[in-house]
Image (tube, rainbow, N blue to C red):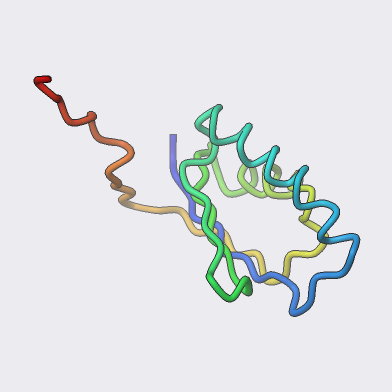
Length: 99
């Protein structure tokens, strides 16, 4: 299954409605992480940008997942790019301890 990286821009200011949606958004992301739909989720330290690595059949399928994010209506400039290579330590076998 192809892997895509989704780049997002967050609003300049977070209003009360945005902040109230954060717990449900995090719960949804955690569900997708557990289901291996989302491989990685990151937000910049200044909270202006984010990146989500998602497995999906095509860009339309990934867009459909992103559209379900509780914070979706607040996201600006959503860009979806299919990756040729996605390698990470998380996808490798765990180190064996002989203890």
